[in-house]
Image 1 (cartoon, rainbow, N blue to C red):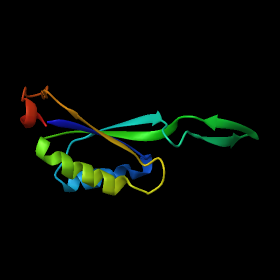
Image 2: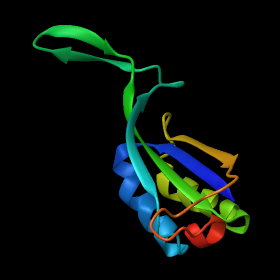
Image 3: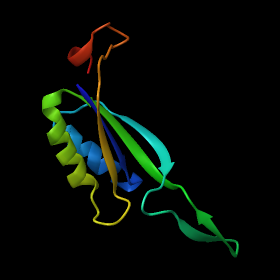
Image 4: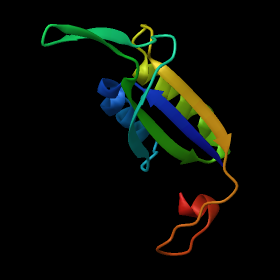
Length: 112
């Protein structure tokens, strides 16, 4: 099993969720996060004063998947989240050793 964590622009969340749902992925976790990369933030005006916004709002989508679904999920996320502009985000894939469903005690792929 793998954990696929995608950090994307907030307005792309619905498109990514729909793309994953079309693959049969029916469970995911969404977290509002802030960060920066090559965008390096931007400046804004507030009541006439200019200030720098270092951390930009993003959304992190976490999904646990069987190994054979990872590449299709990555492709779906990339296609749904891409705008072609800087700051589209990143996808991280990490191994998952064990999953336990608390309610039933099911483990691993039966728990996802």
